[in-house]
Image (cartoon, rainbow over all chains, first blue to last red):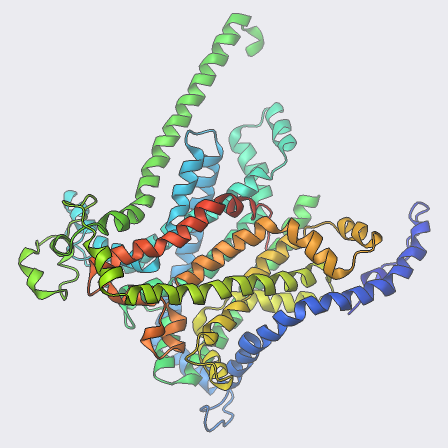
Length: 314
Length: 310
């Protein structure tokens, strides 16, 4: 554990100088403090190690051996095997496509909603509650209702029939991803909106007032001020939506089972099915590849977050 | 331009602008309200349909759930009707669900004893861990925090195999501990709480230390009270997440008797839609109560959740 106070160069400024000895004296205490504070992490860390970190190391191990019983080291064979596997390729493509549509959509729509609801419109708080309500509906009834709406003889087809369009078997067509994206947005927009509303109310009032006094248009205020203050919230909401976009497997699985229509076959299906067929190496290799991608994404988000912090402090 | 206007004209313009604003606000309200109604439909549908009789349900949705009871088939219409108001309010579904077959009550209880320990445990563990991450910003701790964030993002399927093996190794497979323990240590709450605790100014800690408070007192008497709102909002999110769990019990538990209602509900769907609506309505009640009681916490608790590093 490195100590920041020790590392920082001795201040030469006359005003700061008297503080120097105090800092040095504190650093020993600080070091002890950092150690004491560690006890608070210990229970959680032990649990994390047992249930998440060690299991994950086991996953990495499995991805490099031929089978969990034989345990013979095969280098990257499992990886080349799944990379050539067409089911895995489809699953990757579908997962990426789903996340790339659903996440931005959920972020942008909720931001728009938050901005609209921030205005002085009537029944503001009731509307807020209504948009949050999908969070409460049990997954099972969501499935039931989505089945009623998007069945071949369902409501969605009756509606498009009014416009003269032919019936579509939604969940067994190329529209199936759209149906799931709709479900995702419906479920997540409310919570994202709340996050944005909180962020909007944290923008310093005086900055907005000065901008208005200087004759900035409301578009300029939005683009140059609000969006800048919101940028770190946008990152946070993106991250939350990304987490939730992986949880959509639950709904897809319940709606369409283990082997859904091609465009709904997600990475989680691939892993789940390999688990059931006891092909642990394939599952582990897929998991490791997915983790690498996640680390890259998180890394980029962290860097972006650093940039934004500097930007606001300027 | 406004300089050339007389006072009267200025006043008129102000009144006009105000009226325009009010009009625009109502206009946005109506547009948003249309969306709001669409958002609310599934919830309302679940509740109202739970009061329909079995025959009415199969008449409306028979097409979808045609493997339902065969004697009802004669009433099935060729189109699926989405009906909001039952022809006749019937409590039959509720009677079947909770009096005739107490199995549902049992599953409901299973859900309760699975979810409550996870929520309470996860908050306690996360509060401690977050306190450490907030007070100790060394490189090592930041690296551990990064690991927590990455593991938070992983879908359940990634650690499916090892979780299964760990459960067998600890001899907790087929018991609730195999679901509760991983739930307690799930990193989601740590992430949110750390972000909040890191915003508590150092000066607060310094002041407490000058007053002779130890780490444990700073934690329980300063950090926890300050985080109350965030803790509530995280607890709600964790509750909703685990209240609806499906994957974990299917993997970890062999005995279907011990399944929580969420798993049971997703299976009952295809057999008896009406019953599913009634059970789902009851299943919504705990979440609804928590939500109504603490919606403001949900809103306030995350007021500082900008950024991802914390």
